[in-house]
Image (cartoon, rainbow, N blue to C red):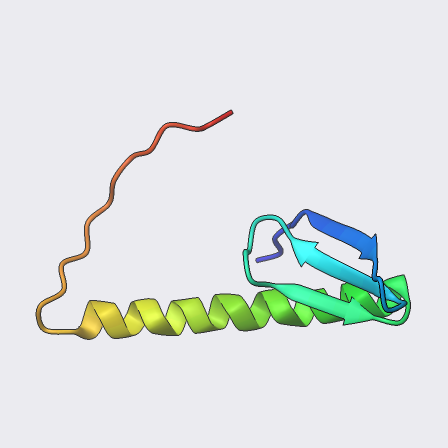
Length: 76
């Protein structure tokens, strides 16, 4: 499945660009060009999501874990 993400692309103080993903905190990419930063943020998003998925899987497999769903009102 293809997902769309909001990326904040900013010039870096040290030159180049920094890209951050609004929907995936912790996913950051840096590059000398905008294209490099975008390419790296794509990889960072996949890595962060994979890590979170693995961590969740470990929690679910723990003997004492209980998985529930809750509803939270939209802040907007």
